[in-house]
Length: 294
Image (tube, rainbow, N blue to C red; front, side, top):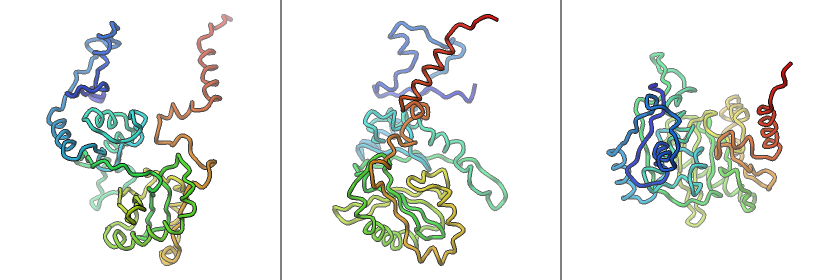
């Protein structure tokens, strides 16, 4: 089957690269696949060598493709971050991410057709981007929404924690981010609608651009809702420019999302409470009970 996922074998001795076949041999287990169904392992020594060169130059790196980073695969990372020090760690995150799969197959799904009427579902070329890793306090990361080249909404990025000091900084953060946007992005970015992420460095009074994302529901709206955001299209541009951007932060522990939607597989989120686990156990017991003959 040409659509079957290929097994990747890495040259560096990292535990995550052990294949199922090797595991079965070591533990005297039988392979679940026949020899005819087995997928021949693949290796990418040239790609690994290039990745190792980048890691040797920058140290730890942060991986992403053309559009997305594998943030939904954090549950596969031992430290719970996208920090990578070996090719095996990078490949593991990429293979475990639905965001990456979407980029590979459906990146342009919500885009309009080109001038000649042709439509594409994905880019012609894919790029593996390795950024130098920086330890950024998540409390000072913010997602900003721009429509008609006007900044109208700012959201705290980390939905899993309540940072009490942020509530008292809302007006200051709104002013600083708005000023930075007008000076560095509003007059230089060519598209009128987009979403950008920034890190506000209070220690040196500086704002860093982290990423730019599509203005579409494929980008997480965080503390906003895309229905509310898209309603901005009905607001006259002059009225948008006169209104300061709305900023939202988590202001109490009750607003915290204990399980962020991009942190764990859907199955794990669905059974993250006791009631769901009990219901699952009841269904399993019912399914395994012998059926009475009629």
